[in-house]
Image (cartoon, rainbow, N blue to C red; front, side, top):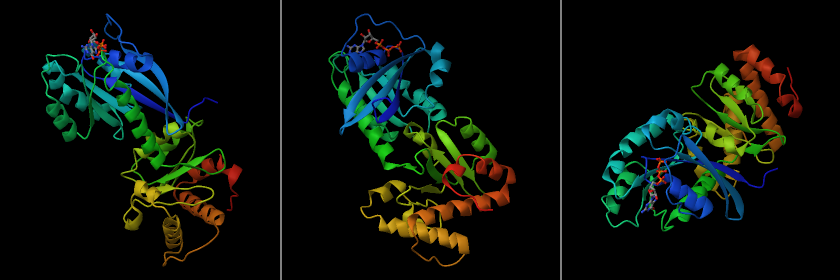
Length: 337
Ligand SMILES: Nc1nc2c(ncn2[C@@H]2O[C@H](COP(=O)(O)OP(=O)(O)OP(=O)(O)O)[C@@H](O)[C@H]2O)c(=O)[nH]1
């Protein structure tokens, strides 16, 4: 097993010549390479860093700024956890192009991507874009902002370390819990076609083990932390649940239980009893259509909830039900017809 807890993909974009390759080389190799040629397509480097005693592996993708490579580089946006948009503080046109880059990011990257604006080459005397102009732009577009010099190694380490720390915090705040040591589960409510969801995720069975779908909710089981963000990008539109074996957690982003709307906030709560009760309340309410009652052993609760949802699922689509029944759940749960 590889020796890291988190793996994040960081992609650098921006006009040709702004210093993307130099930033990457400075961070990964401690070099400022002389006579750096233009990047062709996409280049790739890895560096593992340590944050709060956890190993974080950064996969850093350095894309070519030249227009002719745009169709290649766009395909790298989708799975990026962070995008670093770089301009050259001594070159106004590289700043003027930022709105175009943002449009690309909007179109091709995940809505959850961490976006960072970097003004590079601050060692140069001929600055054209004042710091406050860069900062304003970043603020207006909800981006982090940093000025760097790859040449003088200024803020380069800080740039990548802060990104790693931010991504780690984000990942930690959405916990995926193991059910039977081979599956992670989260429940979502969504706009996606049931069948396409099932297909998409079943086809990558190694990382996504199981999906339960019903009329108003589906369940995604994600065993890989690296893939968590892919699920979480749906979180705004869906009702969202998380479950674990020892502590059943169910966080409702929907309308009925507005007191537990925010997953992140809920995880910051110190005591668990608050949302334990919400969980139970919701299950029983849905099950009986009556006022919630509370307290049953956690495992039973958990099982009951799954059973309930699978029952519902069956009403909706027999094929899907059988498909699920035949798959991974039989390892952990008894099916009762
Ligand atoms: N003064 C100064 N020059 C820099 C800095 N970073 C990069 N450069 C110079 O800028 C030029 C372009 O740097 P690259 O890193 O190749 O730029 P890029 O953004 O990767 O360019 P493409 O690969 O074509 O997209 C090179 O001549 C570098 O030496 C910096 O921080 N300060």
